[in-house]
Amino acid sequence: MNAYILKQNDMEQKKKGIRSSLRKANSLIYTLKNHYDRTTDNEFREFQIMEYDTAKLEEVSDLKRLTYFKKMQLAKKGKVDTHLKSLLAQHKQRQLLIDVDAKITPVGLLKIIDGEVLRAELQLGYESEHQIFRIAYSNQEGIPKWKNLNRDEFVHFIARIHPSASDNLRLEHGLSAIELNDPQKTEELAQIHQTYNQCVSQAFHANKYFKSSILNPDENLLENPELFLGKQFKLPIFGKQPTFATLTEANGHYLSFQSFLRTAPKPETHYYTVGEFKRMFLDSQIELIALLKFDLRLGVKEGVLQIGRNVDQAPHRTIEWESYDSILKTSELPIKVKFYLCKEVIMKKNFVMEKDAILLESNGKTAFLKKHYKTGKWHFAEIGKTSNEVHYRPITREVSIYIKHRYSESENFGNAHKHLHECNSRKNKFQINQNGQ
Image (tube, rainbow, N blue to C red; front, top):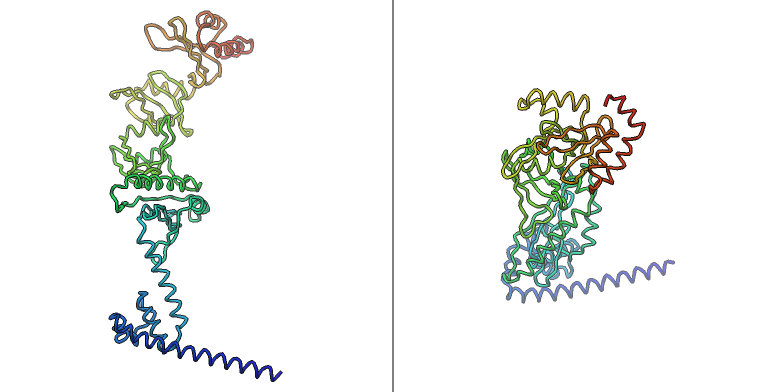
């Protein structure tokens, strides 16, 4: 056993001797090499004379001076310290990032925000030399860590972010001022803009929490528009897909929105007067319930009753809606109109509904079948030649016979016929008599 230990110690001594000899050889080689380099590299000569003995490694921030430290250590010790090796590796990696970044044209920036907390910041870039798109999910000391753009990876990265500080996530993005070396590369620039728009759209649809931060327009926007500057809204334009837009300007007269998902090369801008915006995006969401007397309309929005009035505005006649409570407080409506709304519409529920209304037209005659709100029974009205005023009455057997005789050729008569049959049943006649109608 003792012989084995002695043998191991002897081998270790030999290894130390070999390493010591190698370091001495390295030291001699680098001493001679450094002596030559001093004659060809003025900066190295100044570093050796002025800095090497006093400079601290932690204070050195550039790769060249760290390399000088390495050369001096090799000449002095024949080896490089572990700390210096680590610093050299870090600065080489940093320099590599700088070299890559220098070849890339910034395209845009995407931010994902949770409440007031920045959860992620993604940079999009374009490498003109190889005509490829790059993306940086993070940076090192402010230098983007670029990699080739992979759409699947991009979508997966965004989709897995969940809010913790709020119940939604907010997507913000901005297009960079893109400058390509060759001004003739219009097709290349168009491809950059297209890719940017695609990335923004894919990012938005990748994470369900982004849609939760999109606001629906309501009366608060018109009352305090300045509080909503920079917010995104969902604008349901009739006949089109809803538009997601950012409020960029707002005052008491008009609102300005810029398209949110499609912004390159320049975001589309929409201007609305306050009145236009109210009619298009607030009043348009009101469900029409009934046409009332005095040229009024009854509607409902989110469970709140609305009263609509015709307003003559060039070049068309428009409808202005207000909540029922609000319109009763105004002094514009005559007392008899307010009385009608309170007693006949609200208390007695004496009106016919527009939903499922049936239009009958035949031989120049026009009539309507509509269901009475309170009784649930179908009523009939015919438009006269001299007046557009319409008077509805319950459908009795006599009225039913008249409708069949006059409007049997109407395109919608088939829809009306089944309701006429209901009205003529013995049960319905009994209910009508009970109601005094």
